[in-house]
Length: 271
Image 1 (cartoon, rainbow, N blue to C red):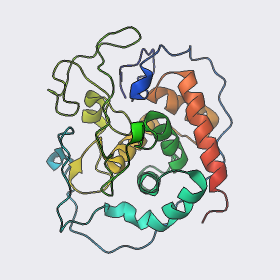
Image 2 (image 1 turned 90 degrees about the horizontal axis):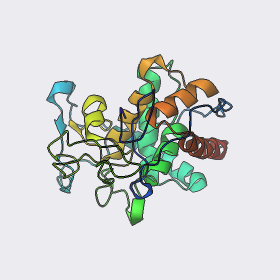
Image 3 (image 1 turned 135 degrees about the vertical axis):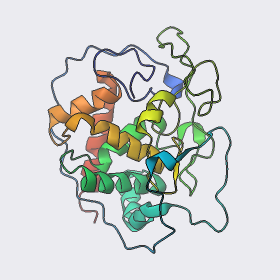
Image 4 (image 1 turned 30 degrees about the vertical axis):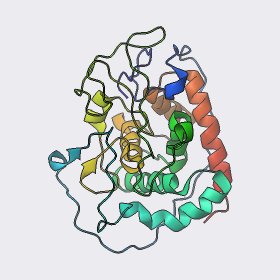
């Protein structure tokens, strides 16, 4: 997200690559726009029981300290509104090899953006493709997504300390999200930099907490970032511009496009 530790020119970045890949300089942004992704049907939602009223005031939301794993309270329902997509996600996981819990988050963000920003036309396949590249859907280095949407261990990228191929970003959050009070690190399944999370943080599961390690929150924040500046992702050019704003690297955009196209093709016939 904006200047995510990538060596980047022009469009501003949302996230760093996978922590084990380092931060190589991107190729020049001269790729012809890809074909528009195949149409993707809206994820099918099922009615769910109402839970406690969500906090609506953004200022009242909390930012959670990431290095500490805090299990949900025994009497608190896990999952939030994305449970509406559990049946759809189970069917889709069988053809896409994406974890069901991750698909629930992508579908939830897709539906929320379709309602709030219909002109953006972002779909779950783009969010899934980014998360596949950034963290293997929260499964980086053998992690698994827990029922509450957090990885089994926090995903924290390399220090952005000015090493070769790495942009120097001094600590912006007093180590709150990444445990480092000297340098920033990209964090979570969508690899947000703390300063970018501070701007784009979202409460995707409506539990009153904004947590970049939580895949519901991170997927929603990524969707909002990609749709910024009135972007329309339904065309190849609009989609490419959005992805390059997330990470200004053509190799990255091509990798994300390949995943997104594959997921869109797999989705055909799944209702």
